[in-house]
Length: 137
Image 1: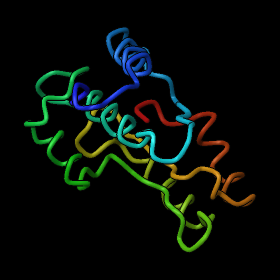
Image 2 (image 1 turned 45 degrees about the vertical axis):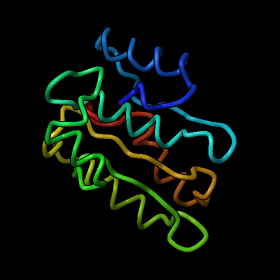
Image 3 (image 1 turned 180 degrees about the vertical axis):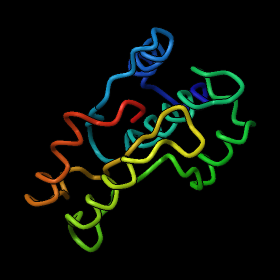
Image 4 (image 1 turned 30 degrees about the vertical axis):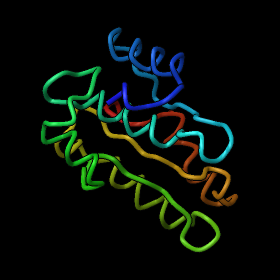
């Protein structure tokens, strides 16, 4: 739950405001030093968007929240390095998956971590989808 995150108060309030207003940006960049909790905040944001009990404030009890906590939610996709870089093949696989409707959630999310591990080819492959993602991504 948001209250379990130490710090990031302003960022969390901004993310909650997006959800309350129904105006969720198609892309967000979480930047900062390693270990600050960027991924934790991003995952909580996914939970808050898709919580079945209380959208905007994850309950940590519904099916969507539990699947997210267990890293088994089919609509939370991750791009991580396969070796030293995130390969273009991995990006293309995620892009193909994004062409489908979300399986269970209201919104789909792709976490690219760390984004600086995208090589030129994978960055270029991701660019079009980043600029014009499917509506619920």
